[in-house]
Structures are given as C-alpha cells and as structure tokens.
Length: 113
Image (cartoon, rainbow, N blue to C red):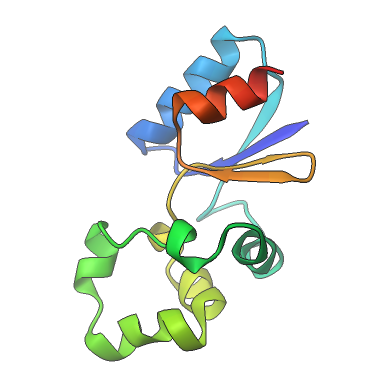
C-alpha cells in the first residue's frame, strides 16, 4: 500500500491524491501535522532522499526561521523537520521501500507500475 504524507490544504498533495485515485493506485493519505509519527518517519526519509530534497526552503515557514534555526539543517535536520512539519517538501510518498518527494510525471509513472 502506498502512503502519501502531506497536508490536507496543500494543493500539490491534493493534486497527487486526485491523480492516484484517477489512476486506480491504492494509497492512504496521512496528514503530517495531525496523523504522522514524524519521529519515526523523518529519519527514514532523510536517509533515503537527504535533507536537501526533503526541506522546503521556498516555504513560508522557512522564510520565518532565523539564521540559527536555519543552521540546524546541517546539524539536526530531523529535529528541525519534526518541530516544523510544514518545512517538509510535499507530498512524501512511500511505495514499498521507495520514497519520493514532491509530485511530478516521473513520480506518477513510477507509482503506476
């Protein structure tokens, strides 16, 4: 079963869920603020894709951080993301052992197979 981690009000997440439904791809949607166990998931995601791919440096949350908080990207990216789930680039999709971040045609095609 595919697991889609995101925010219910995220346009990209909603687009991904809609496309997965249209493609008949079974999935569960998990809200990263309310339902996800980020303490368990974030380290796995970081190991799989790295901080650069997982941290959304274009987000409003990122722009609101001071320099000391931003510096945690190097020292403690997991802690930073767990404390600020809206910094996670979305959606994060777990498909078996594979983890993808964001929504693109490449991700959609990979999930169809």
